[in-house]
Length: 321
Image (cartoon, rainbow, N blue to C red; front, side, top):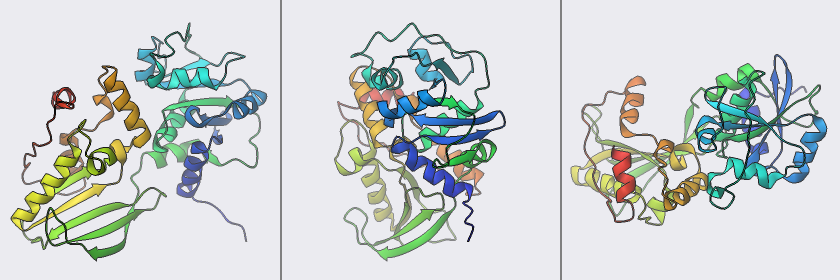
């Protein structure tokens, strides 16, 4: 039997491969390109990439600005990886957490020639795998059979599409904050983590339903982090729904609005160093816009002002501004 993988199945494999330090193949019109995520790459794999061709490093324009590197491609910058450099050098460029420990990284010269389309897709792929948005690319004549292959156009289209969610299971769940309720699990068709709908009471479908979109925050929701207001917002929203007798909380299992727990902890580290990391976050007005774009009318924006601490006062001020 000939088994043909869909682009969603290939994409799920590619994300897993990148997280294990394995390159994936992007099949571009100009020829195949090996792409590997810097965060998970090893020196041995870097040697393999060098043996296959001339490696280039791609970084986001935000990171390039910090490194004083010209982003000739607009939203990203590319540099040739010099001979003799190791993974430690690449990670020092990719990971802002190392900036104070490894302040000298240059001189760095951005590449101007060649198309940046594959590098751009590689960065988006790494971000979707919750890895640092930094990749090494190598143009090759032929793609090794063992690697996951992704057609460039199909990859770009798939990364821009929202996954379809299917209900998996639902169960009654009494809650301390909200009283009687029910939790339903939804599974995406792209291999990503499940999301949850928490139904409080029995909402009247004929009237506007009190609702909240809550992005998962392990440090705030579970550990009670004082660096954010996520935990207090979650519990206050459930308590408000319990007090009104009904509501729906959509718990989006996208740690740090999709950047992953590791990258969110990097943001915490940067905050400790005095950097503003709000650019990593999605603001509430966008939540309303997305819901309305999907046909869900937002009747009222109910304020939820809780969770101010001495540790997060500056962060919340910047986020609010």
